Figure: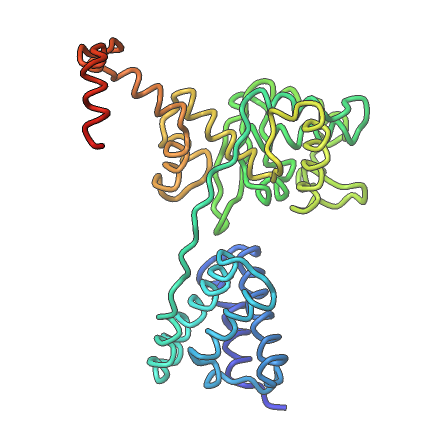
Length: 339
């Protein structure tokens, strides 16, 4: 069977263009691959077009809009997920514009499909007491408990994304002054994050406990599961939720209803901001491309807003009642004025 133009283009895009020319990370490629897997399922189940017969000519705006509606109506995906899938489709058709300019109008019709407006969620973060309570939950007398303590502490201390922590190797940890951890984030971009002294001591004990200080262990994952493989994102989320449930039972007033590893990243950013650390430094720590992304923390921190207002406040408004409010007859006249 002769491959279709869609099969050829998609294969080249995912296997050559994204990793080779764009330098996209494996996570990005996987996310795009998942989008097109869903699109193929939609075409086969809803449109009756077998995977092996789907062509680029059939992928018009109407079909893509139908696919996006199917995601929301049938698969119950959120608007954010729908936008994420659309972004992957947009990226593919931007690539096709250069590869096949003879279908430029068709591709630009798809590129004109707008993103849905999504209500921005408030940033969830834990205060310092909640972080301390959470980190008190792992049992330091067991090997798994010590691993979990170091894992959660490093996520918070470094402000890392969960995938960045999952990908950390032993060689990425430097314990000699200045102590640092090398994190690889979106787009395979790396950054060096300083580690504080308490975190360094925890890591030193952890490496000794697991015999990871030997040179042959440099390429080992820093955090491994019981099978010896690196912890996955879901594995890390499971560990966090286990201790979160225990902490919430003991300190219900300190914790929200739900939590994810990203909450620890948000918490670190908010605590740095509240300590007076410049947004530029926080941006670099978190690995944000633009400081505008980091500004969401400043916008979310109501306590900082209050402190700034109190600091700049001038005693213009008196806390004493004005004379007219002390005049009972005048107040009664004003109240009856509109009757």
